[in-house]
Image (cartoon, rainbow, N blue to C red):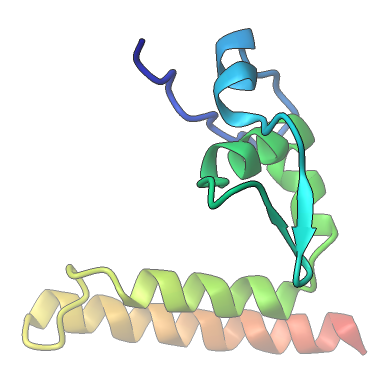
Length: 112
């Protein structure tokens, strides 16, 4: 039997299929050193299912904006297309960093 596709979080809450539920929801959650665990199982599908049910707008409301921006910068800047040896990639990385600098200023203002 093949694994069903991973749940795909959307802006608004959406449902998952029974197949996704069966494949990605652990039978039993355990807490090990402050983390969910169940015998080394990959929790990616479970996390995506929770985000799918919650909706990204609701999830974002629960996290400080400055942390979201930091995560976005880290993940996007690791994209191989943003190669400093590539003129376009370097320019795009520069644009990303300028944009995030502006967004961080807004986040700082909003958190005051």
